[in-house]
Image (cartoon, rainbow, N blue to C red):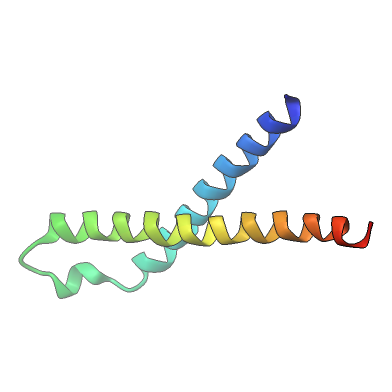
Length: 76
């Protein structure tokens, strides 16, 4: 049970880290300058893009680590 809890914490931390990293990267594009008539919607768009990209990258990263760990079963 402790292993499942640790995996849950790692997943949450990974998702939040990659979402923050995606938000930081997307903010550098200054999308709000392109949408001058809709500043609130452009901020929501940035947040939604950051969540989508960050979640996708985090899922890939966690799946990759899990698959590398499972390669040990191939040798046994």
